[in-house]
Amino acid sequence: MTEKRIYNFNPGPATLPLPVLEEMQKEMLNYQESGMSVMEISHRSSLFDNIINDAIERTKRLLGLDDRFQVLFLQGGASLQFAMIPMNFLPDGKSADYVNTGTWSTKAIKEAEIQNKSHHVVASSEDRDFAYIPKNIGFNKDAAFVHITSNNTIKGTQWHEFPDTGDVPIISDMSSDIFSRQLDIDKFGMIYGGAQKNIGPSGICMAIIRDDMFKLIPAGIPSMLDYNTFLKKNSLYNTPPTFSIYTVQLVLKWIEETVGGLAAMEQRNREKAETLYSYIDSSDFFRGTTDTDSRSFMNVTFRLPSEDLEKKFIEEATNSGLGGLKGHRSVGGCRASIYNAMPVEGVKALVEFMQKFEKANG
Ligand SMILES: *Cc1c(COP(=O)(O)O)cnc(C)c1O
Image (cartoon, rainbow, N blue to C red; front, side):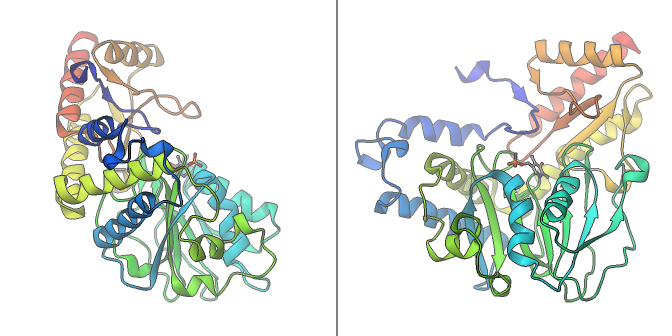
């Protein structure tokens, strides 16, 4: 079975670590002698308490979080966070700063707009089709928060250094690079991400929120949209997607115990990205689409000399066991998503295939 698995470069839902899938397979019919699968146990059972608490503890250890930070599991994806963030953290009389680096930031801004919440787009890279991360941004000193998207999944850009916002907390959508590298958490009031790129399957979103942020939450927010509800109930106010949380737990365990933590994870991700970019840089046939200093270590976007060749490339790659290389439907071209679970060998296989394709078609 496993020898038929492909190298899966899908942008999300994305490839999962094979050892995690194997562990799930082993435990599928009888989870820890319960006589049930994880999907069949109560979210109120001590078995599930152990799962969610272990996921939280691993998160704290991996990111080096102190007691100020709370780890929540939320539903509705990162997309619901776009709405919940201004709803909870942008009280009347305050304004928020947003940086627009592409589709996902744009969607986050739209949700502040819909709610008539005061906000400023203090920087944008739209002028060059989101091919770079803006620098030297003038932030407002009295903003409630600064919202950024740490990795722009679609265009393939990434913040490699987070901006200095003084005392204003940064809130970052980290859906496509959470747990991919070490992080100086002190700059952030909140980070969040849908699990389906780097840490699990779809259906669950992780948020890490600093204590003081909860004080900003006004009264009158519906329970399921209020971060306090999730905080008070250890993310078990309603029935969460238990199987997704279980998978996240196993992926975090894999990062911690098999990979060796976030420093090792970052090193591996760096190696993969450098392997791919250095080949693209050396080729006259393949062409990167973003500024060198802004390019993403997670989503490597590139073009070929023509759209016909791109189509052929994606088709032949798929037939060679390299899947998911089509660019986002809004931008075209090619994109290799090389998240945590993509092994170094997968990237090497892709580069070999690109070399062969260039020789045959260049
Ligand atoms: C995929 C993605 C999203 C959307 O996440 P959902 O879980 O589908 O809501 C948001 N932001 C970024 C950066 C993403 O990559």
